[in-house]
Image (tube, rainbow, N blue to C red; front, side):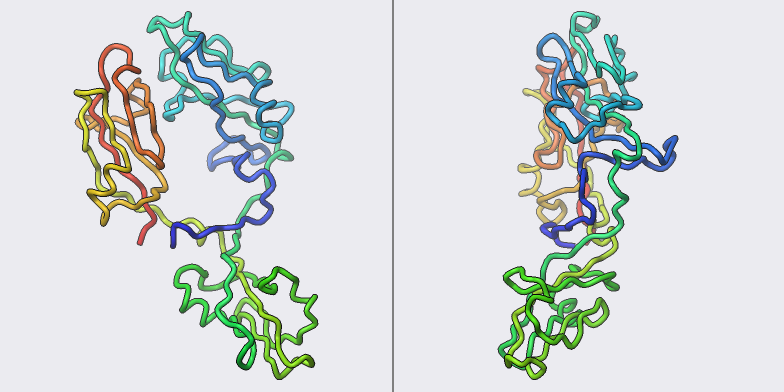
Length: 309
């Protein structure tokens, strides 16, 4: 599927702010919020205070959380760092003080909160395609048929759409035009014939289709491992902008996910105990020697998850 393909989710209230419980979770009557990381340990420590988080994200955290979850910004468990945690509860939030650490500084943490089901968004199982307008009514009518659209916009429409939505190119509803419609369904698509209209010509229409959710998100295929840099200088810089020009046929411009492991032992970065300066699919991975305690960065290698072709 095209990377630029946009999905417009049904019942999008709170989408992006709350995550449904994952398989194996303790209850289907609860949900987790997104992860929050409002502070870093460069000052007195890492202070992820609930009252401040709620003030900055007023619709994203329920009034009475049921549980708090803490991990490092690189995805490691809170217990794996060895840090002494000052506070971690659903009333205050999370506090790690640099002064209480033997290594002199806390790791960088993020938090999320478990909320009651009524705060959770509806389960999203469907999505809309973009709007399509392949024809205009200058001939015998406006023919936005599924067969023609699927052939012209390959992979942008699922094989068996659930529903069709029709409106004029200017965004007016189908019923507002007064046109006599020959067909408007998820099997045929849309047909308006000029010969059926009292005014002699159909309005110009566009259509979109409702598809299963898995059609919106492409399957992930991983690249090979890349190791373009060593930590002998300022650190280990496995940057996407430098990797892509060298491997344009292997690496996509907009990866979906990123994995980082040590070059030799292939230990996950989250278990390395080191601090990442950057770890995202936009820039790639950066580990700076000056951010580490007890030595330079390890030598890392990375791979990216791209949409399968």
